[in-house]
Length: 167
Length: 235
Image (cartoon, rainbow over all chains, first blue to last red; front, side, top):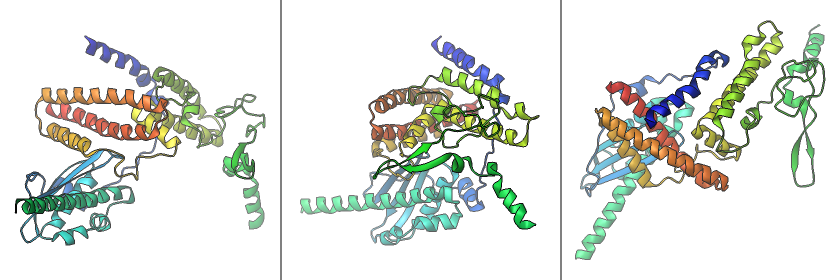
């Protein structure tokens, strides 16, 4: 009953607005068309999914962009030679954020940790032709790579410590 | 001649931004500068206007240009407060738009039509910004020179982001109406809680806390929108 009352209240509040809708002046809405590379990554995202976050050779980066309410998870799997052999991501956000993280996983694969650290947001933005208002999406992807690498390194240090302790 | 025509063009003072004509910057003392608003006058009959926002001339009733920098709370005749009376806001909005809408000015001069268009658009913007708690709170932060943009962390914890990721995954994967409804109730509960806390933070003057809470609210508001999309998808 409370739910029904709430709906009735909402309707009562909104009805005069609906009636006077013509009162509001028409406003210009600007929608930016996405570049075809962004659309491609958005429609066919590469490497979506998760790796085992508890595995010692997996680093997980979780970052957010509060201004848009986006959240991005990027994971890397590193082999014994220190090479990134696999990468996965999950992003809840706009097309540019999804494309940026999808591209980031493609780029980190096959790189060493030091090489991956050098990936810059400007390169991601350039590859996807992101407009200035979407540059922060590429920054988020760079932050996610850095966070994943930092998490991996932390795990390796802990690993070394426990190895030392057991010796 | 070209020079004379240009001279005439420049002498038409209504072509200049009003702020140039109306505002003058004077030194209050050695250390601070402040903007003093000169008494405004009607652009048509020169009668003095009321304190801003003056939508119409009290003498000749002609529509006036508005200062774009005017505070939204002033436009909507509300106190600067997060706990705002939404019914009062809606009443004020309809009252203003009834008199300012461009349709009322189709028989008037070009200039009056332009003033009505810009005023009406400004009132729309003010109304929409103050109507929803999230945009209202963010606007209040903006008035204090604070923004979520450009602050990557915004003081959010990793645990918070993990929770958001988890609930977003649950929502993306579910095909059941019931689970979507569960998530909606959960998110609504969170939003209601946050509104209470944000109100408290603003009334205590704790803007940093308000900022973190508004960042959290932005996330939950996004998920609320996605739940709506999901529910219509499942149906």
